[in-house]
Image (cartoon, rainbow, N blue to C red; front, side, top):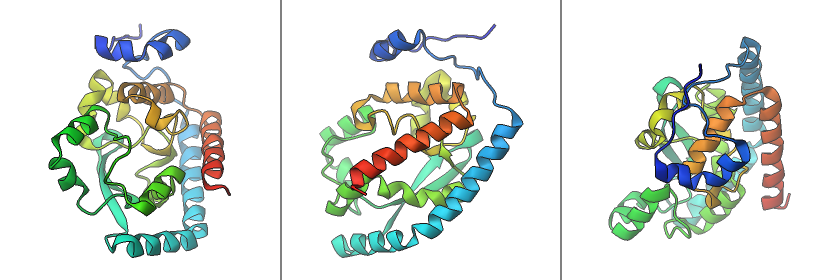
Length: 234
């Protein structure tokens, strides 16, 4: 019988609305393993769409790179260390949206650091640059991760990327989280992002893993595209 393990009480309380709607917390075990054809087709889609995306978006990439350079003269790309499938570590590419010394700035402001560590996000983050605010609002900053998808380190759709230091926050869900590739987009990205807690993000990652299919991936991609069009005014 499938083993159901409860989250710590404070986590369970924060997830009460989702639990009420969906019946129970997700299992710490993988409850559904898609057929081999799913993984083959998913990789074909990832490879094809990422290659086409890189080629089609190259002019946009050059424009964004120029804007970042003109804004403060710092590096164009930010290399974020990620823990991926089966615990493999790699660097996810993002357009830099923060000041060059963002980590040092946070370390010198203990109150901001405390708030950041609570949810791995900061409302009105003072480290974000002028061009960075636009890039984040439109999610253009994440488009260089198409290279990570092309290389097979990520997927177009999957759980959100996490730094290795975040894995302990998944507690008993950690092994399940590492059973799939992280994605550029996923349930978190189309579910309010800044407006949900870290514990709710963990739940969304688990829900995705338990309900993987080409249909659900397609629906998430379509919703992501819709949000992108709205935010960019395209």
